[in-house]
Every structure is written in C-alpha cells, then in structure tokens.
Length: 367
Image 1 (tube, one colour):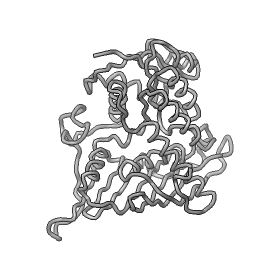
Image 2 (cartoon, helix red, strand yellow):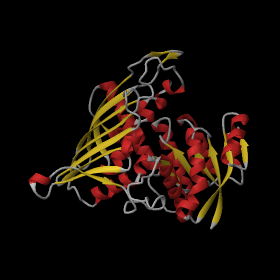
Image 3 (cartoon, helix red, strand yellow):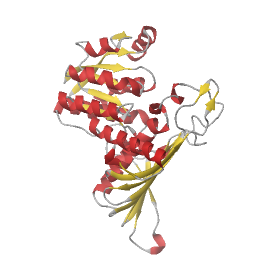
Image 4 (tube, one colour):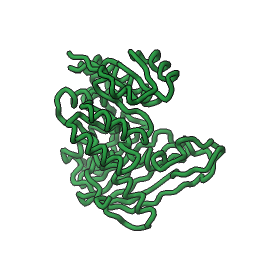
C-alpha cells in the first residue's frame, strides 16, 4: 500500500462527501493507494479551518493556488461551483497532478474543451463526478443493455427532477444566477450522462428551456427552472428527457425507462436499491415487470454489505468514485467518465440551449 496526499477544493456539501469517501475508500475496497487528507481549501480561512477540524485534514487554506501547488498535495478533488473548475484543473495538470472534478466539467463548452485539452496534454488521470450512474442497480442496468438482454434499444425516457426551488417564495441565491447554475447546468448533466452511458451518443435533439419564476425575494432569476428535449441517438433509438428544479414533490427524481425489442427496464433513484425488469418471454398470463432488489450479486454492492436488499446509499456512490479515481492514478489507465466524457455532456447541454433559442432540431456535433 502507498499513501497519496489528497487536496480538496471546497468543504461544503460535496467537499464533505469526498472527504468522507477518501477517508474510507481504503477500508471498503482495500485499494493499493491509500488517501491521506492533506489539505482543504474554502472561501475563507475560518471555514477552511472548520472543515479541517471536522473532516481530519492536516492543513487548511483559503488560497486555491496554495492548495494546488503544495508539494504534499499529490491529487486534486474539485468540489466547488462550476466557474471555479477550469483554472484549478489547468493549474493542477500543469504540475502533473491528477484531477477529479465534480460535474458539470466546466461552466461552458469552451471551458470544458480547454480542460480536456489540459488533461490529455498532461497525461494525468482525470475523472468527472457523475455519481448516480454508479449505483449497483444502474451499473447492472448498463450490463443488461450491453449484453443484449432486452434486445436492440428502441426508446429511452429520462428525467432529473427535484423541488428545491418549487416554492416561488424561496429566496434568490447563487443558484438562481448564471447559466451554469440553472437546471440545465446543474441537474440535466446527470441524466444526460446516464443516457450516454446506457445508449451511447446523441446525434440530434430539439429542446425547450424556460424560467417559470422570473423573480424571487432578493433578486431577479437569470437562469432556467426547467427544460425538456426530444433526442435521436446515434444507434437509431429515440428518446426524451425532462429536467426541473420546481417539480413539486420530487426529491431525487433521477429516473429512466429503457425499451428494447426483447424487454424493458425502469429505475428511479428515490428507490435506488431496486430496478424493474420486463422480459418478453413465458406465458402471457405471467408477463409483467419484475422487481429486482440489489444485493451482493450486483456490481460494487458486496464491499459495503453482505445482505441482499439491505441497500447502499448516496455516500457509497462517492466512495465507488474514489475507488475508480485511485485506480486510474495507480494503473495509468483511463476510467470512465473522463474529462472528455464530461465534455460530451456539456456539448449536449450547449446544443439544447441553442435549440431552445432557435426552436429547431440541431445536430449535437455542431457544438
């Protein structure tokens, strides 16, 4: 086993999740590389010091450059808003340091392309944090589809819907300003990533994106509340997706349906330890969707729990990501999703934004 010093940019919601993941991944997966929480960076030295004490870092700073340039920080995790991703990643790659970046990769498609160029020029390990697709259930769905268990895929429906801004009286914040922080920048990338993972590239699309609550207490809303799009995949399948932060009653509405020529699959993240599988075989009187509970027979379940149906949770997804990032560093082999994979998600978002403006179908490769 070899220690590796981890620096994490951001100590809030996702910063804490990654700190916990790095602190526990070695015990869960018996990784060859064992993370050492070397330094945390936050917006003020007071908050950084608070995170240091709470999560067990050796040191704290309020200067992201100091974090990136520190000789004991051997790999970087970026867990801050999108507008901060590019400069930190480029600086780390210039020093030959691997980078794990929370989604979406960049605040714009131009940012994403620049980050991919920096990552690939450096030859360093690079990953983007799309954690939901790493549940044992969704990993199993990917395998079922890849193995042809439900035949040729003909249709996909996906959504990422939540209700954290469903109340029109909820105050304005950083989340209500700037395209990168709207629904298409924040929630849509997760489901677009799922669509690409399950069915492959999207060839063309038409989209509608809108702001429903244009004014909130404290300020005007400058980004989108919800969006929808119809898509045509390169493999010929058609699909549709919906994204919303004002979907009343939806807490973690990351859900999808996939239809093939021999069966179908349904999944909802609000019940993340189960999936529904339909196989078009057997007696007509017995046909129907069958609920499958995840257990040790499914990908990445057993390291967390030996009991079928006992389940894994949100934090476990982040631990799986940490395992994969460490493997990419140790092996020198790319681990999906790389920065290039993250850029392809941004490309679909850029195409959708353009389509919404022109009210027309667009080709994704034009963006």
